[in-house]
Length: 321
Picture (tube, rainbow, N blue to C red):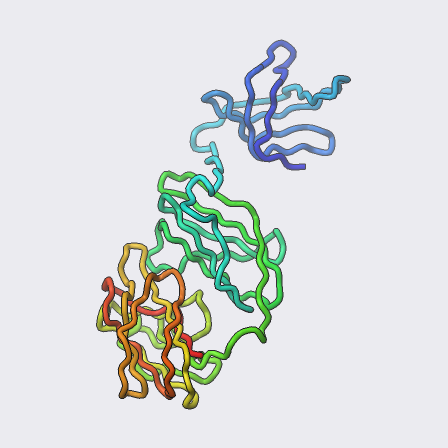
């Protein structure tokens, strides 16, 4: 049996001292023999540990008698865990853009957090997702992508993070359902549908298209990966060849970004079959994908960055329907 934030209102120390002030303990555990072990007790300005034994009584209250206790040094005192709601701006964390294989968790924090979300088909979770961000660090706009999900399945998740002062935060466990495979439209720009990269300005680190941050990451049907150029800024471009000529009604575009504010694509142009240029189209932000009406027959689509915040510009995902 495990207790969180267990409160002991009366403890008998040996047989001579009673503490009337509340004592707060975290992660206390009670054995089958009703021996209570509390690894951390905060009493006034002290941090202690204690082992206590159950005392039988007839008044219906629970009492324990102290058997052993001691002080904890600063380095052995674990940080407290706070409610994520204390540092959440606006809506609480929510799961959006749910498909049969992926979903996006999004929320804004009032202070920069190094954040992650644990998820799985049971409350034991088993997987973890973080924001796709090359230089890491604490951020305010959180959009981790949950990938490798099964269709038509319920998933449980919990958001947790820490700030620059080492304070820990976590939210309540929630759940969502993935969609069925048949409910998704066919993406003409997906590698799985025969599309391929025919030209790209550069790949971060000089890697190949099929390596991390390579151009294939923009058409791999995974929001958990992204194509990043090698500092091309406004000069970045990517061109995708379709498996066959298709009528494209909608182009879906998602820009990547860095936590320092760089790499955001603010607007882009679209070139159809090396001839017709459309746009520029503006991207409101980098938190999700946005749809743009194209209404063209195409066998090839090229996207050129028109305006950006510079740096390693690129796309999380490109889709066409």
